[in-house]
Structure formats: structure tokens, C-alpha cells
Image (cartoon, rainbow, N blue to C red; front, top):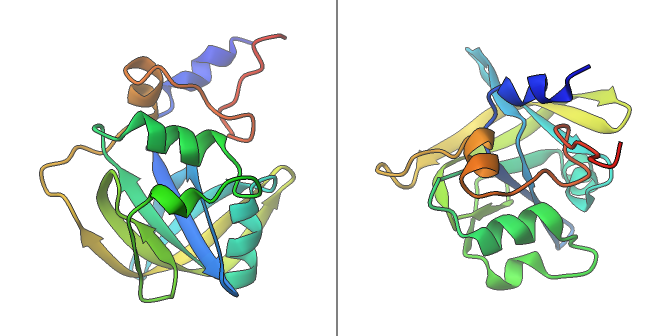
Amino acid sequence: MDITSLFNISYGIYYISAEHQGQKSACLVNTVFQLTAEPIRVAVSVSKQNQTHDTILNKGSVAVTVVGTEAETANLGLLGYRTGREVDKFAALHTKTDCLGNPVILDDCVSYFSCKVEKTVDLDTHTVFICSVEDGEVVDKEAVPMTYNYYRQVKKLKSSKFAPTYVDESK
């Protein structure tokens, strides 16, 4: 199979974040999409290896930041390749608290939305969180949302080993 055929699926780049019992966590994901218009629901896919996964599961909500094309590479690296188990990701980030008590990452933000988890779908390595959107705001009307293709082709970044789009190039 030509695994690169999957590179033509359109994805966005998102920072997701949650806080439970004083523990903040955040990571970069590429799989967030709207499911329904009324009520507004989205799906967020997260690797079970990410600390953020467990925080969302325990909290029952998540903040999603739509990342713009002008995103700082340092932020993409921090949220995409570093673990919150080893580094305080929030030390260098600008945030505000959303209506559900989660930190919203404002760095590189086009818009954000606050999501309450309604259901989960177990997909072995990942969980898909089915969420109702409780609030949202456009932060930068001039910014352009980053696609995964832009992330790969222009920013020259690759998926972390926990991303659904990860390709083990040694195989």
C-alpha cells in the first residue's frame, strides 16, 4: 500500500487543552471536525499515550484552539513533540480560562471553542471524544487556519509518533 495516499486527506492543526484538579495539559492534534450543526457537535481524536487524553477523560471537557499558518515553530514543537510529564508547557504560553474551566491557548490562535464531552469511542490507540460545543470565539479574523499539508510542506514538520498520521519511515 502507498501510505502517502493518506497524505491527501485534509486535516487542520489544533492545540487542545484541559485542566483537571489543578493539572493542566495540552497537545497538538490534527483530527478535529464538526459532526452536527444542531446541536453543534465536534469530534476530537487523541492518542491514549498523551497526558492530555487522560486529563480530558477525567475532566469531561476540552478547549480547542484552531492554529494559524503564522504559528511559531517553537509552539508547534512544544505542543506536538514534548510531553507535559517532563516540561511545563504552559510556562511560555498565553492562556485564558474558558467557560468550562479549561485553559485556552491564545498563542497562534485563529479561533477557539469550548467542548463538553458527551461520548467516547475507543479506537485501540486513540479515543475519539464526541463533544457538544458550549462556547467559541474568533480571536484573529485575519489569520488563516493551518492545514496538515501546510504543516508538512511549508513548516517542514512531521507527525509525532502518537498522531494518527504518523508514518514509521524505517519500515
